[in-house]
Length: 502
Figure 1: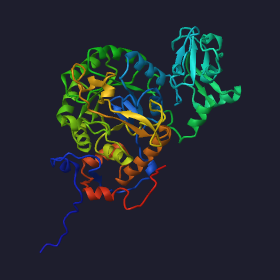
Figure 2 (figure 1 turned 45 degrees about the horizontal axis):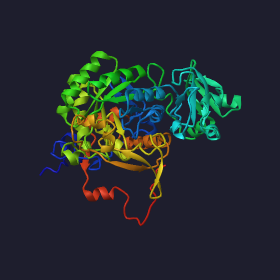
Figure 3 (figure 1 turned 90 degrees about the vertical axis):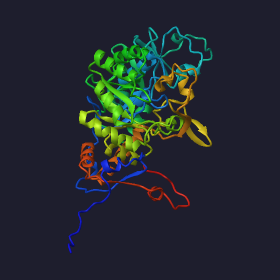
């Protein structure tokens, strides 16, 4: 008899697992550990958003109106990632958010509001979320900067019918818009002041307070330089629809300096998107176009043939998305990412895993299954940088978070994302909810990145490319977890516990 032991066969290769007829989510899957010969800190998370957009970290903020505006865009760029600013507003407003994010090099919390000397400030709502009003001769961001009004100073005015010119303060000391935190700190110390202006020529970009500088300094070290484009400004993306009027919107966004455009559709394999891809590549050949959303190889191939520079993958996997329930269409996100990535890499098209990210383990799985970046909504919602005000709900501090397919968002224009802007009846494919206060992304994203590095170390991959190579060479093995295995793999068997990772 032959007692030669059989070759070791442990777990499953990805191609076998994902051709079994099942649609797997991230929680369904588990990677088997591999061999470690490097430190976790040696893991390189650099990647590409699209063909021509390099990133230091694989994190992308989703184009949702409760996630990505200028504060999120500047913070994500500072962290080496990127944000895609949502289109659920006017073209001019979206362009203004892009300019605000790109016209600074420090991730401060600010949405600058501009007024003219002759304006009358009647309500504190005129300040929006900003502690200041910037006064220019024309009342616009392109006017000459001549002073500012603090919210505290305005509140102390008994006569609210006064013009701004009657009580505005003169411009504080100024620094170039591209100044970093160190230069701003030096200027504040030199002038013994609490405010410094960031300017471009005679135009004001923003005001930075000493308190805000100290807040940012208190977070983990930011990625050196952040995500900076060829123009020397932070990289920012924007989403648009696929209708005729979106061509005019795109013109505004290109003038504002976007680095990439995402064609925003829940089902991207449509004649509308194919025509829009060809239009953008013809009119703006230097602009990277990201198509989607897709979940099948067939969908992906159509968009690749049309000329996309990146693919957004996911349909119904987000925490506030109900597309799979309402329309009975979609795919488990683990399967979708693997399938689309397996065809996209052959054409050099990076894949963005959009949706289904609840923890760092999901990020490790998405990236190891072939994605180049992960797009996050709920993971970033509720942070300081997310739009909206905090409120208290059942004793918890929360911010609103809503799906772009919710009826509430659709009434403001997002219905075209679901090809429903011409329909008489609006069918919701999302909900409105709330998420707990997470603090600043400047704090929790660096910890998330370190957790991802440790996950990559466990599977023996020292970079994203290494993980992809291990998967495609069948060295990296997977298994499907039973329901009991998923329970066992989480926190269980305790009367109480404190869930705290940093």
